[in-house]
Amino acid sequence: MTKENKEKSKDQKSGASRRDFLKASTVAAGAVAASMAVPGVSAAAEPECQPTNPYGPRPGGGVSLPEYYKPWPAIRNRNVYIPGTEVLPKNEMRIMFLGSTPWPPTKLQSGTSMLVELGNGTLQPRRFFFDMGNGSIKNAIALQVPAPLINDIFLSHLHADHFADLPYMYPFRAFAGGFEPLRVYGPSGRTPELGTKHMIKHMREMNRWHEESFNVNPMGDGLEIEVTEFDWKEENGVCYNKDGVVVRHWPRSHVKDGASGYRLDWEDAGLSFVWTGDGRPDELSAKYGKGADVFVSEGTIDTPTLSSFKLGAPSELWEYTIDIFHTLYYAAGYLFKQAQPRIGCICHYEWSGDGLAAESVAEVRSNWDGLFMFGGPDVQVLNVTKDAIWAREALMPDGAAPAAMDPRWFIKPGQKMPEEIVLPTPTMPREVQQEQFVRDLEIDPKKYYPPGEYRKPVQKWPGITLNPREMLAARGIKLDD
Ligand SMILES: [Zn+2]
Ligand SMILES: [Zn+2]
Image (cartoon, rainbow, N blue to C red; front, side, top):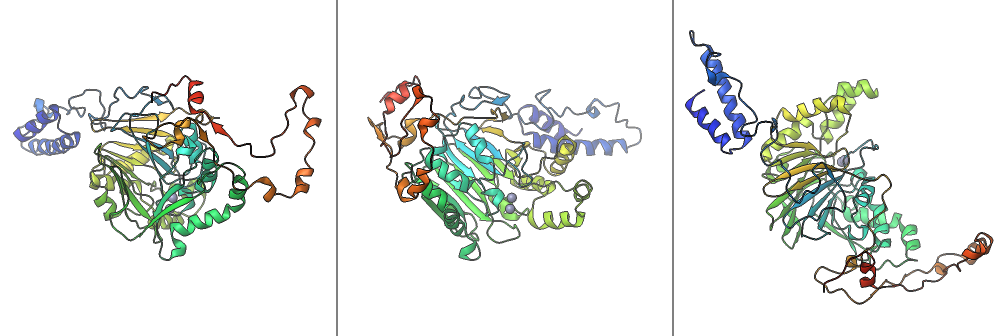
């Protein structure tokens, strides 16, 4: 080992990054080979030539896990994330991979969606959703994310595996008490008909029957959708800038114009998150994703021959498809190497079981030796601070009830809790959207109620007023206002 390498080795012990260390040991290996080529010099005889301890200063720490992969006190359970049991402290970020597959949906994987939470020291952190694929909302609900507080949804592009739960979610969000308009952000397309605004307009048109029927209930402005459609071509354009959080976007090569990558920067905490969305590995994602704390890429295993064996379809079809749409695991690793995040993640991939796990990781590792995880199977939870990163799986009940209604959802941050909260008046009573004869066909309730249990059916909107203090007191919560 050369003097220089000894120096580097010492640096490692004093806390230099593992990557520097790997570089140093590669050089060291070269030096060994050179010394072995010199006659009379026995490499084995020199203590310097013993295997290098890749764990560096923390024996047992693993080959690929850096010093900063560790839990901290706010992580209540180190092995599982138990919904509703942790307050996310200020300046801490939590990412929940709500869904992780393009296709096929399975019991283990819903359509792609990521929830980025920014801690504010309360039970309800600031939330940003990146894509909202099929089945992802059931996971958000199971994680006790209050439906009324689902908002700020950033769509990477308009493939249905990235927004299929949106038409399902938004009316129920309003029904559950989400009386504020929904905010959706997404790219334009080559023509207006191919942009996010057009999709949302026609999604609402598709849901017209659903919206009208729900207007028999208090909905407020909850069915309104405010769309921020940005120019898909713009590089590093700002599509969100509020209260210290900036979200930028850039174009991606994904077969068709109108696909975007995103980067969220949280200035107060100095933390950042990147989601490439779908597409081929590209220079812009490497450039604008540079130095992100968390860099999430889509990913595909590059085994077309194996896919052909398993599924029968010709390997040429696999090759063609992945080569014009997607990022292979090799390439995801390459992007990580370019961007140098604190952790590289792959979401939007097909989990193929343990049999292919080693191959999948090996493909990523051909280019990336830093911290890495798959954002699946559902639901993986990643906590991030300036000093540390910790990943766990969420412990979710199979049949989860949503979070109990909390009157604090209905007031804006900093606003004083009023004495009472009046639910919005429904805009479309039953009588205006249903003919009398259909109601007349309903069976007389007295025929099925036991006599002692009879309750006269409510036929008109009764007007409902909440007493927030009573509601909270019933759950042992006292407001100190
Ligand atoms: Zn996709
Ligand atoms: Zn796509």
